[in-house]
Length: 242
Image 1 (cartoon, rainbow, N blue to C red):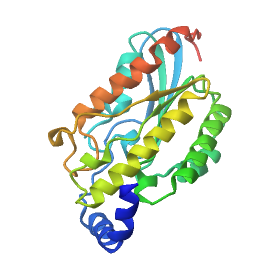
Image 2: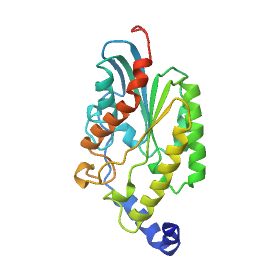
Image 3: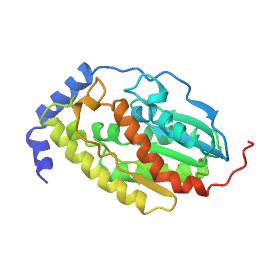
């Protein structure tokens, strides 16, 4: 593929750009707000959000604007939602596996997962990442007895304003390959749902750092995740008492 040749030809430039981006990138704080709680009325639904800084909601000021807030609002209209976020800025798939292995065994009906961008910027080979992601899905299914695992795809990194060319183009091509592999992996597994995050490349919808989603993207993302699991949630009949 052309971008593989570009990696070789522009390797010194790409390395320089990666180092420069990491040193000069604007550091955004995690959004304020609780990362676990309960809200709503109706059948009990246990929700966990797992992943990296986007799963945490970086790019927003409060969890109400993040993925958690938008999912919680929708699900709370029909369910008593016991929600929790287990995400960390900079997390890779391997990091997340290690963290979840040390976590307490507990039941969650729905687990939303968002990972992969840091694996790409960390130059993890696609075949290694795919194997790790499969391990992660197995772990979530076992550790949290998840009825539904909703996996968000890889964003179009070729539109991230923070990344200069040719780094942006090379990373974007790799992100596309990762997303195709992830979609194939997820759609082949029972109880898993894939959600594409191919949002419009509108710079004004990104966060100030040019790397994370802004509030409007989080709102659309939350809506997509909700639509992907809506029929599954209706089939989950749980008592209202824990």
